[in-house]
Length: 438
Image (tube, rainbow, N blue to C red; front, side):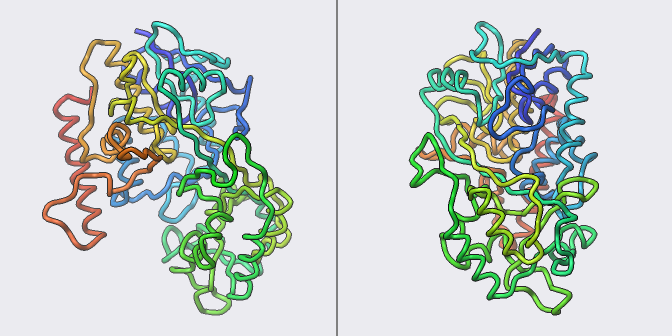
């Protein structure tokens, strides 16, 4: 049985892998390198756009639990991430170039996956299809999807700048992870005193932004998780100090005290030649980025290899059109995966591809589709896709709040999260042992 997968991002690659590993034949269609979206640059598959971090790794966190579940269900991307990781404290961050290259090589070398480079401007008729074209789906295909699904919703997504390590002033920067996690030197920290922070804040909120097109630029919808730093700053003078610039868990060795604010730089590649500004997604004009971010101690002469950008994304009103199997109710031969379903985050997108791929194959085989227990993080995300939003569906990443509560209630948050994780992995093991995950 042959299944078409459109799009070789994280969700599409995971879907194709699941189908192929379980005996199906895959026609994987990807328009790169023939055509690129405004946000894509790398010809390889599974390109990471906004950040190179896949969030927390520990299993008593929602993000870590999701990755552990995927690993146990035969994920392609989680092992690739582990093999291309770079130091990032308690997070799993990767060398994005090596990660994409590894995924691409594995996809190309699989005998059941047949790759075609072309833009897909229409949904193939009469075929079983997994549509994983991402939130920057090309215009022609997006129009067909919108017509099929009764329209789509738009939001804006942003990416952070990347600077060269050699251009940093190390005399003003110290290496450390919050609370000494990791090897203690996974991040570079640019400390600010109160005067430096207030000057930076003033310049940031008054900096000139790049124009947005195709929406009401007065109030564009943005992901909370990818909030442009200048938009965040407008919420209040101390908002950033309780967000990406929070100084807690850090002590400046030059003063022996906690700084007023800290800008963290995370390693972008394994060699440590590039760093990204953590939490600095932005839509400032490029010249303004260089000027304003140059006020950060240690970045006065920073060389930018990529400026931050903001781009339009699109997602479906999934509860109106999709089931938790990621199958389209209106046309059961079609499955959707990735950010266009309204899951937020790299691994959340990949987890939807994992489920959509398995279910597309089972549909082709005439088998019942898989619905994971809602007590698992993978199942909770899928449940959100079908039932979330209460009339105002918005993208959402993995979090324990979307899971059924633990009874009796555990007051201590760390203990409660550990209990969520233990229950999820136990229920997933039972699900697999029952023969459901085959």
